[in-house]
Image 1: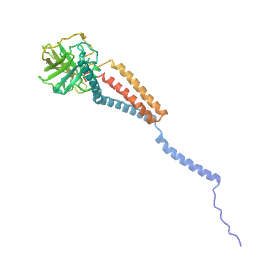
Image 2: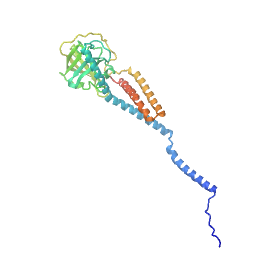
Image 3: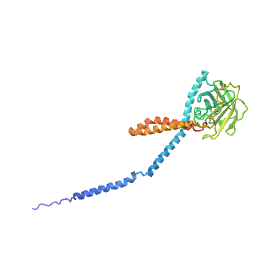
Image 4: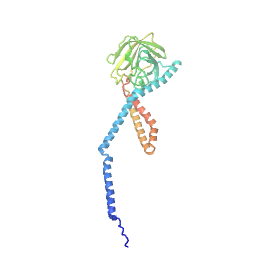
Amino acid sequence: MTAPVLAKPAVAPPSAAGAVGSAGSVGVVGVVGSAAGPESRVTPARRRFLQGAWAVSLLAALVLGFVGFLFTLSHVQERHYQSTAYKTFQDQLARAVAPTGAAADGDPVALVDIPAIGLHQAVVVEGTTGRDLMRGPGHRRDTALPGQGGVAVLFGRGATFGAPFARLSELRVGDRIETTTGQGKFTYVVNVYGDGDHPITDPARNRLVLVTGDSDWIPGSTVMVGARLEGDPEQNPGGRPAAVAYDKALAADKGALATLQLWSLALLCAVAGALLLARYWRRSTAYLSAAPVVGALLWAVYENAAALLPNLY
């Protein structure tokens, strides 16, 4: 009996299998590579577009942050200074050492209370530069203090840093203005108005003039309110400058430009340092550690930039 013969399975030659395998793998790799390559590759034109978009976005964020600082955080800063200055001035009044003559820029020299516009016990500082008016209403240094013989002039912002004189134009003839200085308490009564084109003319010797901007946005002129002193004035000890060229309405604090450049450079270095630190440390930890420093420097940049705006803004 003859044994059955089993057919052997056909086996491709090694060379053929290798050829098919290599061809198949090459074909797959080629297809995948050709499909993924164009999607993952960024052309120079697209790269420039992305870089420009990032730059514009960053600039927009900085501008929006500055606007937010002016209309929110600047009010917080002014209230903090007012609170501290009020305690200081009350202590000086109690010890009878409050200034009645010349004083250093930024020092508290008076309190002003205008119930008709909701201004209560605002601390008046010496000087009317943009930086002085960040602290509150400012006394023009070449004029008398409230309550003294002569004309006393106070400037106040109308939109930012607490905006103490925002409602100044609402004052009407007969409204009362109360002031307190180291020489006592004094009352003025509103009697006249003016603006940048029509200065106040009043024959009364002892009076008070309040000045602010004419707009809640960038002011182009001024609003002035004049008031006469009730009763007899106190002695003016003098000692003040005859004129102050930089204490003008709507003036910008040009000296802040150099300081702004230095703070901006410090901010740029801090950001670069944070990015460098993120390459060698955990990214979230690096950014969290740098955030307080960057925030403080950004505040300083915004504050100095605000000093370049009109001082009554």
